Length: 300
Image (cartoon, rainbow, N blue to C red; front, top):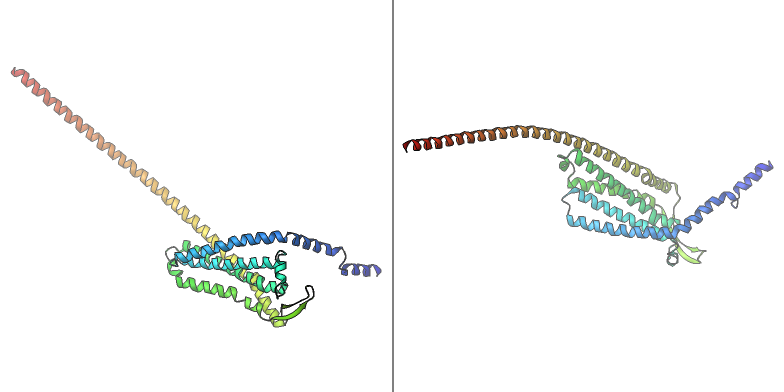
């Protein structure tokens, strides 16, 4: 009994060795966090610039092609995802800690979750769904090249993209239902700040779990399946068309070679006939000259 009680007290004691791995990982995370922040900000700046240029290019190209609409929607969604990622890096970085302390809002877990995590999930899943739609559109262009213009019209593309944004951004409303705010005293900084927190009622918890289920399981798996299946069909169809093209090309080459031999034989026959005719004509000319010379010699 004494051994069991001592083991229980050892496990329940937070100062024992079993908390060391967690503290070790936490120390490593906070030690590399400044470098990660600068890396994310640098890559994010390039992503923002690239997406803005893509948006301007496709706006200038126009929307006569339906794929331009899809690429424009993809660039907009990805731009919002990059902005959410950069904002989360700023809030988590110790570099901007002095600036964040001056804000009247507490930048705690709930604030980061509702201003960074949920928007990032929303726009990243919308980007994945738009990518799936583009893959499906490319697949239909190869499978039905003569009918794709009638299947995917500009109106259909607008409806699909609008539906993707509605279903991609709609569930995040469930996560924001039940948010409450309150002015509290921050004992660490001795300041009164606005704290944002979630209501832990049963209904709001179920709604947040439903949104997490959609963003964490349904949307990623569905987009991955669509992209994988569309890419597989695209590869199979391209290989089949390439094989068909090579077979018909070989047949055409064989026919051309056979036809070329036939023409070559005819050309040779014609040249032989011309040569024979020229020889005969030359012989006749020579004979006529000889006969004229012979008659003139007899007269003399």
